[in-house]
Length: 58
Image 1 (tube, rainbow, N blue to C red):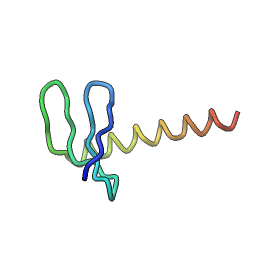
Image 2 (image 1 turned 90 degrees about the vertical axis):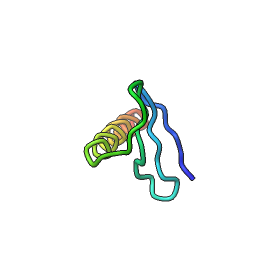
Image 3 (image 1 turned 60 degrees about the vertical axis):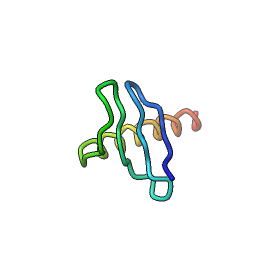
Image 4 (image 1 turned 120 degrees about the horizontal axis):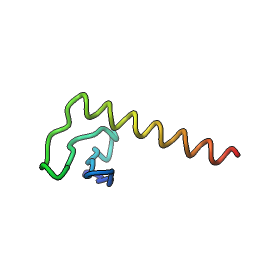
């Protein structure tokens, strides 16, 4: 089973068990996730998580 997450310019599909990025969908089409796109998604998620933590700790 996969979980879709909407992002700016498309969607990211993650493996429901592991949370790893499986594929990326943009206006240009669907592509299997490369190591670079996996790292980019991980970085964006990390930034978002830290921002939420900062807001919660105000």
